[in-house]
Length: 190
Image (cartoon, rainbow, N blue to C red; front, side, top):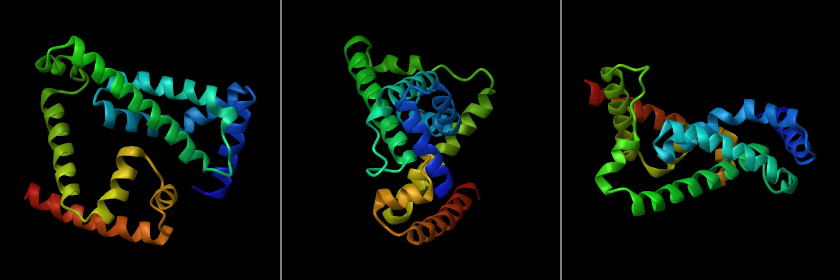
């Protein structure tokens, strides 16, 4: 993320802390898709993920006054709030399902997307499994940044901070990982 965007986002979070709803709308527009991707990857349910996004941004509204720019970048803080809320929702859902739903019935909660044909849904699931399997075969230093980017929406700069490595190292690892991932996927498809 550029310094300009980072400074804008920092100011927006501070403005949210002061009660500025327009700043919240701007942060929502900028980060909602990343938060949704994170929620879908953890909750495995699109409608729950949509609810999670709303709860995350409600949390951001409530917690923005406690944001300290010197402690973390705005995107890192937002995704941290999102991660904690999504994990809480996952745990809460697990406890509820464990006590109220027979184990085999959990699949009933995953209603297919009516906009996709059965073939498209099967292909989407198959492709996701192929990518995950190929990621598992990569060295951890290459798979981890790819996972953080694709499944959690972190930028390369944010990944560098999270992993405490130079940005150039993250870029190199991601490039090498993508090359190996491409080769592995071509093997699966061939």
